[in-house]
Length: 254
Image (cartoon, rainbow, N blue to C red; front, side, top):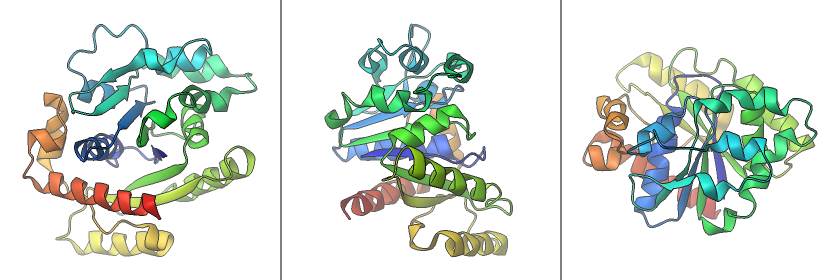
């Protein structure tokens, strides 16, 4: 199963979700690959001890069809979790692939030879609906959408859903939304409760039962090159992401 974690709105906890769901799955004994497609490379920076000596990144794979993705896959700091690394060079991908007839299929082609080696492949996408995200939607079998429980949380959701429908019609007819995860949630406020209700009206039973609260520990863990499960294993954040991973596995079986 290839799951793109996507939302074109920034600051919704997308990379935090990508890192910690991937880590939770790996710690449950699953074979997991996290593909970092974001030019900011936050997943890469957060899960590798040393990124200074990375000679190649996903940009090299997607811009040159002769390169193999195995060359940029590295063991992460989480046992059992591998990561296909990104660098700032990914920002050059869109101008590089302009005019290429297969430009939006490059990631799907790159993952094809290795996809059966993993139980789950997660794709961390940038906060845009550009060519990089389009590659991720074409390559994915499922989408996981993190949405912050804030007043403007649903802004742009129509654009995302419209893009998903276009991708299904043109390039990936089997693409499905496996779920919506509510992030940065403050259960104490009526505003957050109201927003959760609005999200439920739009997405129905796609909304995960477990949500993710605002958490200092979740914010701190990347600085120590750790997932929440090793940095603060007994924290609320660790408990919540563990529950989300368990629910994702149940949904994947259906």
